[in-house]
Length: 394
Image 1 (cartoon, helix red, strand yellow):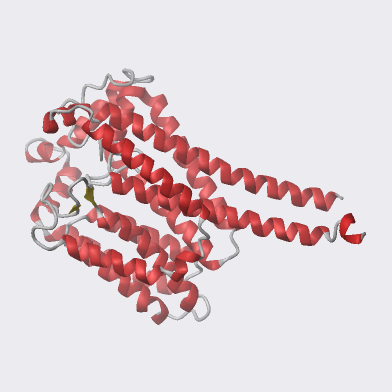
Image 2 (tube, one colour; image 1 turned 135 degrees about the vertical axis):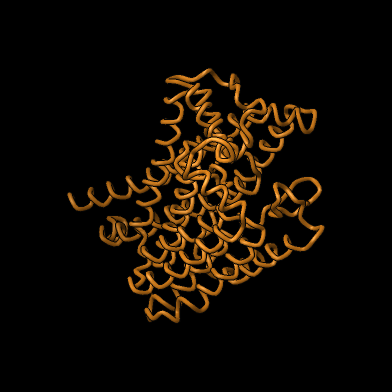
């Protein structure tokens, strides 16, 4: 009787885990709508003569993303193993399409989007998820059974190198960092041999450093961030300085929703990359801490799902997705508070951006499905442990 109650208690906790993740993701995405509604008013009025232009788009994207979120939470995550190659090839094709002149609008000296008339689509966001799924599937089929380096280098590292190169050409350094961090979390959880991880890490580190120093504007941005002096450095650090002003203006409880001053052309990208600063200005230290706690809760339950997943593909997939969202959140907040140089990364679930929100919600839905499958397996094992019921005996 005690063992049966213990099994039921475990199932109950796992079921709660699923719903906690659902509630956390829902709250985060709703906070995103609220903050975009506040932070985008000035820029919408400036560029489109419509203060509600970004708000309407974000609401539409939220509805689409939430539907996708529900769908991915219902689809058995093992299905993605069957389409991993096709998904990756489509993503690579879209990344290559961005580089064709005339296809992608040039925004901030970057060509990261495909213009679909009604909205801009960012293939690098989809490529992050596609690459993670492909590598999880590849390691599951090759490296897990025979842990030799060539089973990582081909095809996993080859796919990673191709995606990295295409995103570098856009250029989009921040997304590459997120991809590499996610892959290394995946390799760690996937029990990859330490020498193999060191070999791949050395290649990645050399590539990233070389890319950072290749262009003059990147070197200036890094040196200006490190020096924090006046003149050219102060110009390069303008966004960070304005971000810190916004955060400092919020004090403990903030100026109130909609009362931000920095969003009125003082802080560039206030509704996207630096929306955390606007949240701090309007809701204060309390608001920022609440948001950080929500993200920490998401990571906590994501890790629990990972640890409770017996299937190699599901365990590495849950870890990589959780790591991807966690890494992007940490880097974005560190940029906003001046700990890291500007990278151009959005804050997951919060920042304005349809493709980013769509991929984050779809990724979160996959984690929910992994939790659902764990619950189903545990329930079956509990029924087997309990043995036949009284009705079956009759």
